[in-house]
Image (cartoon, rainbow, N blue to C red; front, side, top):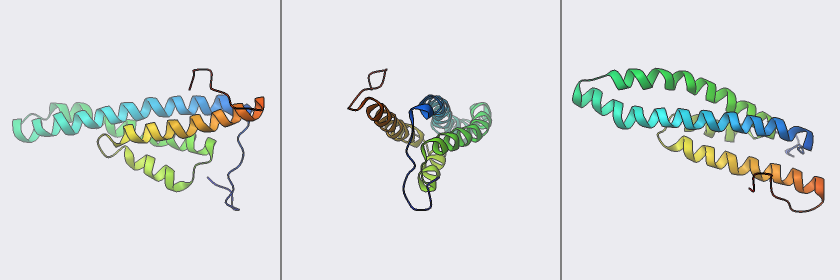
Length: 135
């Protein structure tokens, strides 16, 4: 993800649309996976073990597992585009396995990527600038 010399390659304006798309895909997956995991752990597991009803575990556990794989793909795609180090990608990947942590990982990733996109805009225009959505 990073260059051998330890310097992060510069992002260009031509890369910005692809980065925005990758960020949107990652954000959607992070929220889906995080929500399913919270429902699974907070509702499904207690119902299964205290109420002898495994329906919620079945209905949320299987989709969470499959969507977690898609989350890994979208996180890798975003990380590749913005040149994240492997350590950051590992933390983001593991965040999908801990309830509520995927929401923090999404927030952190979004702030980082938006700052990088703002830097692209500022470099292209010659000064500080906000993104079209006001962030």
